[in-house]
Length: 376
Image 1 (tube, rainbow, N blue to C red):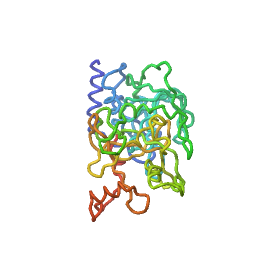
Image 2 (spheres, rainbow, N blue to C red):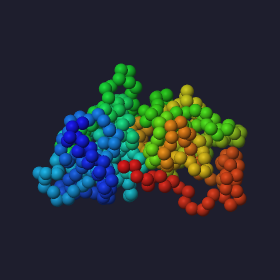
Image 3 (spheres, rainbow, N blue to C red):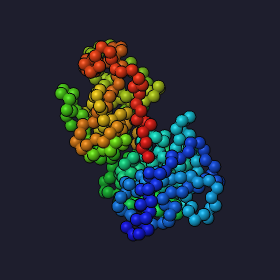
Image 4 (cartoon, rainbow, N blue to C red):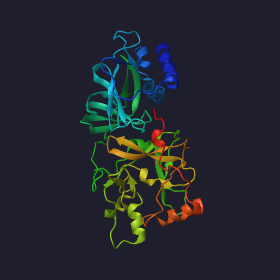
């Protein structure tokens, strides 16, 4: 790393502390330019401090008003606006030379990754070839082609190097390995999840493994394969779509079969839930995503449920860390089951009363606050 690159990396670190969040609302294409750490000048390819440099560059992005195009601090990069996903969520898009862009892939503030490379974006849908989906660790990547926001011909090729060029941070990826499995977008529904149920997600594979839980008689649990920092996306939670929970049950089911049928049911929104049914519960039958293997804990869980847009699964749920999780530590969430009604498992109801007694769970909002944590 030369003096110029060292100065830029130092600037990256400083800007992380002082940068403000991008403003809400649409930006004027003509009057908003981008100042970032790469505005200091071009660099050669760098292979060190990759995660820190990528995260720092994203954090350093600042829209600047009324600066001339030939300003000394502004190169060719500019911000072309935010695309509204709904009334409250936005997708930042930064476009530079030759349509090279960084697009937040999914609603901001929910731990989503970035699509990076030369692309065209229409109504928040991306099209381009050789684009990298950069997972929130700023290292793991799926590189492939996109058509109208749909991934095809994707391969796990992690980030190898980065450089500043004309105001943008450009990326290089690891070479394509022989017999590398192909990832593509597959739309899940009530009966179909993926055509490759044994193809594990590369981000899940890097972060977690499945082993017997430390909770007696609980079966399998989810463990950290590496030290996971606080406020970090951990693992994906995908599943079949369930629009009516009653469809999971039949009249001749035993209580144990009823519990087994919905034990992996995870709400997505008011319209449907995600589920890994009993015939997919074994890792020999399904391991494409592993979030459903997490066990429950009332007191001091180290993870929470979040939303995630995945290039293979689309809009799904995921787990995010609420504190630092040590290597080989088991991951827990609070299931937040309702103890009212017949669907609450007996083990959960018993444990609930053991922990909270007759007074019940302390009053207050039990919905997750994790989506409001800062992933940038």
